[in-house]
Length: 230
Image 1 (cartoon, rainbow, N blue to C red):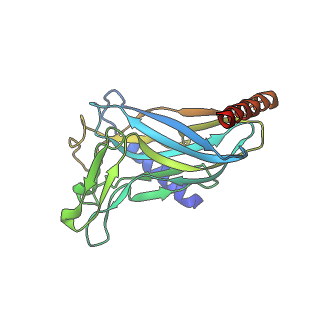
Image 2: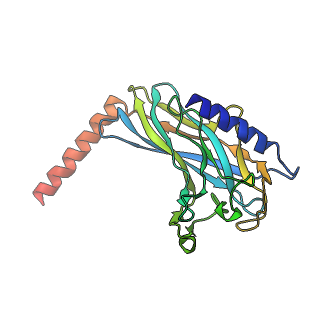
Image 3: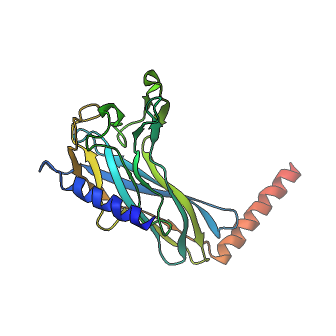
């Protein structure tokens, strides 16, 4: 798996150098989390939103999701869309170099096949810019709803009780590339991608102090008592 990460970074490095010299598009990462009832663990998700009118959507990505202080990343999976394109087993969307992160949270990524080896119709444009239906049923393929913002990765974190941050950043030596164009449907390949300016994402997981937990419990008990009186 580590070799796969290195391969992905190398390919994204090549793609990232294929720029037009225009002002970089912006891809903004956001992180959210859902704690378990015991607060010792929970799930995390990373989403991406690409700027509009200066690109035709996300082409590839390589990201890390890292915990700080008492937060560690226990599992990670990249979630980019890969859709059956036809009846021959070909895929549209992010079909190349799919990596879930080894160790967890490190080097998650995937790429669309923009180098010209695929049918141009297999490139899904507008990813990260809008919600839409990618429909390949006419080819004997499948369809999928492309969400906005697009979820790139998800997993489980552990919290040792101290809390901390979950940060989403570009993997060292990697990129998030966008398809060159001015919106969904304007990209023309092969290649023709640019490295985006990436805004990292972060979220704080704060552990309530014991006094706060006690007050919360008292409030819940009070509410329960009022309901019983009613």
